[in-house]
Image (tube, one colour):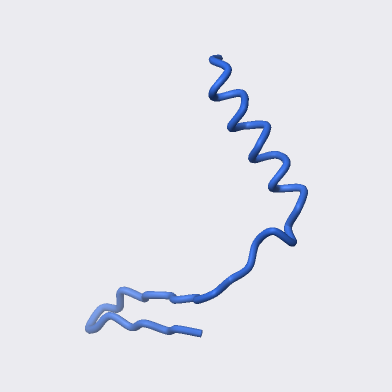
Length: 42
């Protein structure tokens, strides 16, 4: 494994241990229905 990939893995592990770094600004769900598509935005 190259050093660049090792660095990315280590960084992702640090971020996973700090959930306060993340926030949701928008949340959209799209359902592909049999007749129509439906979108829900919160």
